[in-house]
Amino acid sequence: MNTPFDRQLIAWRRELHTWPELSGQEKATTARLRAWLQAADITLLDHPLATGLVGEVGQGEALIALRADIDALPLHEASGVSYHSRRPGVMHACGHDVHSAVMLGAALLLKQQEAALKGRVRILFQPAEEIAAGARQFIEAGVLDGVQAIFGMHNEPALPTNTFATRAGAFYANADKFIIRVSGKGAHAAHPEQGVDTIVAASQIIQGLQSLTSRSFNALDSLVLSITRIDAGKTWNVLPGSVEFGGTARTHDRDVRAGLEARVRALVTHFAEAAGAEATLSWHAGPPVLVNDPEWTRFASEMAEQAGYRVQTADLHLGGEDFAFYLQKLPGAFVSIGSASEAGLHHPAFNPDEALIAPAARYFAQLAQQALLHLNARCCDAILT
Ligand code: NI
Image (cartoon, rainbow, N blue to C red; front, side, top):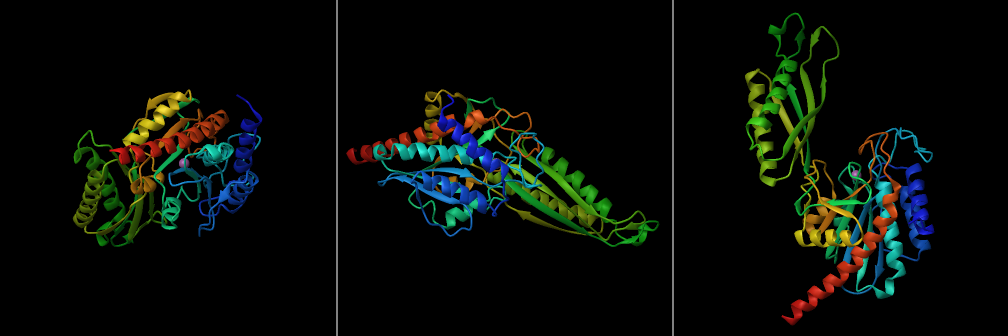
């Protein structure tokens, strides 16, 4: 289909794409979304955050939420599209512009059938997903109060357009960050015996960390640990007195996550001690494992089949997604929709297929409407029994 509605959503997506904003700074994005929602006469709810928007359609007790994220990344675009970013060094390289257009479309479609809705649909345009802050801020602000189930999407460049994938239970990973600092004693490079070599100590710790993941955990546990930066030394003839390095750990299980942190801490301390150095570890928990509710996941997949998607069971994902915070509070389902981009997420040449937008908007409008019917039926079954 290529209706005026479809073309409008693509035009809006392109406008968002041209003017991307970083996490927590989405002021112009919020203003644009507000203008488009207000033009459609959609009620906007107050919230205390500087950016982000919450719209609501319908009336009644039953309440479903749909969520889009709206922030961009500190990346210089190299996709070659005519509507490329006009803000140097900032790019919608994760497709949050696409997600926003999808949920904007869903809001408009729901508004058209507002009188027939069996409850309310709250549509969240969430800021600051990339820094895993926005979902928590929305929760703390009470934006989720009264919501009975929540749905959201991420585009998936590795899947063809018209393909839908999700899974019940664990889906996206615990995405943690850690920083390790090794302190020793600086010395002349020609006299290492007069110092404590922190570069050698740090190298041993890094090697140890890699064998830890392969030797200390079950081969079927999903975990990965990557060191992504090392900061040490300034010149060629001085041994630095300290080294700082860090990276990320991804897991899908609470116990594996806790076990990994404990093992990393012990290894860092003891390897440093063996080298005569000292080490500190700071572990920053990122978004937790995203756990989809089995019933709503089945429901969302059935709706996708009815909407004409090729429906697959998704593999475990090693990325982090702050939608996980919502699913700690209430049931729901997060799903992937194919965006068929040769370049992946967070790549400067990322270029999702816009043909996914309007069908996904129709899908989420239908999903929300049917989920309200489902909630009503569930309530009345309970009363009858
Ligand atoms: Ni993303």
